[in-house]
Amino acid sequence: KDDCTEAAESVAPYSKRAERVGGPGAGQSMKMANQIAVGGALLGLCESLALAARSGLDVRQARDMIGSGAGGSWSFDNYGPRMLEENWEPGFSIKNQRKDFGYVIDAARALGMDVPGTEVCDAWLAKLDADGKGEDATYRLYEFLRDGEAA
Image (cartoon, rainbow, N blue to C red; front, side, top):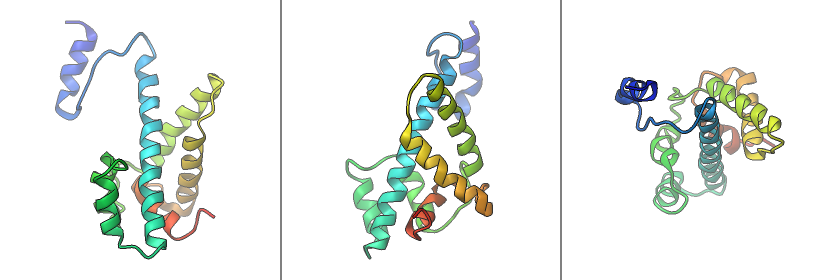
């Protein structure tokens, strides 16, 4: 067995997918690319439902309707219900997300690339972290946006 096959077998119980993506460093680049997508999904979930709430819409209905259409995502399905219950216990904490975003932002700069969505999301999460909410779930961003703290 090669190292990649052996590693894939050991993470199989808690990983949906494990495979070689290239040479040395490629796995880290793949993780960073994924974190950009995670941040985008987080922003989409939190911003859309914050707007729904501030507009006086039924936020549960908005989550169901948006989540079942083109705006849906893993985040809508998994974080949406917990978010609407204001259950901020992390599946993934603000501090951990910020750590990963730091890697993304540094790598993007080294590549001469802008990642504005990631930078905005990180800046907002930094405000939550500074307010003592760093151990809370990343989707606490919803409350931050809904309550107008991003302004």
